Image 1 (tube, rainbow, N blue to C red):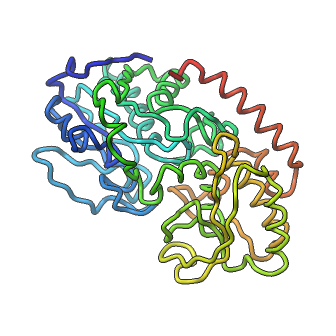
Image 2: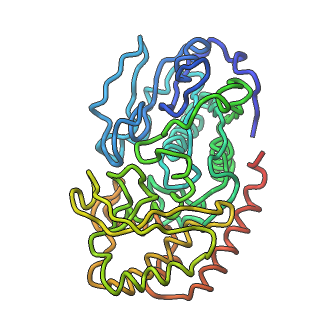
Image 3: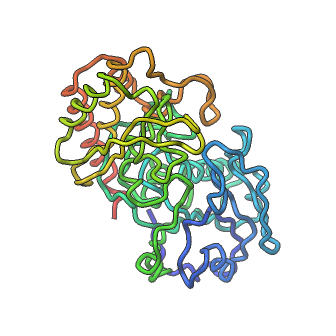
Length: 385
């Protein structure tokens, strides 16, 4: 992993950038605006949700249009899976590809998968031609720190919402994770990491949280997301269409004596690390739009101790037990994959999937998670700084 403290050394280079509104703050501008004063910025690559997080999840950005001088806008989240990879012609004549975009610390979050696909394309270009642009990562802190959760994604479940070998909550910064990809998968691209504080010293301390996507409105959302994202694979609302997505969740069928029993079971899980506030909510869009849902607000009391993934795995297991005829795992296309249901792509581990379907004990899962988290923490030690 190479470090660079002064990007003006690359002044005048022809560049492309993967970015969105989360890269904001220095001099009160979006970073791509300030970089255009340093580089000959030719192209902006758009991630899922668009440049200003205008679009909801799984909505194509093909219709988006921006005008920034002579810069070309290339959408990397279109209607077809092929759109996720940058066209080869967009890399021709480019000296530097800049990655300046915030991550939220979970492998499902697609921005760094888009960056990984760019990295793979640069690797192919280098093998074919002997050279490729420098891959420059403007690094930023992981909003949920170095704590890790989960198990390595097994290759059979790899998709746009999960790169093989990575844990659900990876504990790395963008620079660390992308360097891990480059070295672990032997991509041999010239990856250079620039800590954001060395070039934009006031960015992190001066400005408030800028939502990187529509349903990550606050930093608190990031703490529950490593587990709560699994609800995307179920018929429960994960809170889209509310002001607290992923913190608010539920369904119209969470009623009756089963709900009382569910409350009882959840209250004894990771006791003291979180609080569930019973509530009703009305999603304005997405699942159960316009229908009153019974559910909860998940309030994390001890972020360093609370294990979001284990909480959700346990929660889904209880729903399968208490609501067998109403609770469902969704089928159909999810993030361009139709061969496997979303819950498999998100969980990414056959042992955890077996637990969701009634196999293995809670203590088995706790031990399995702990062993894999310890192993991952040792494997990524070189990519933390």
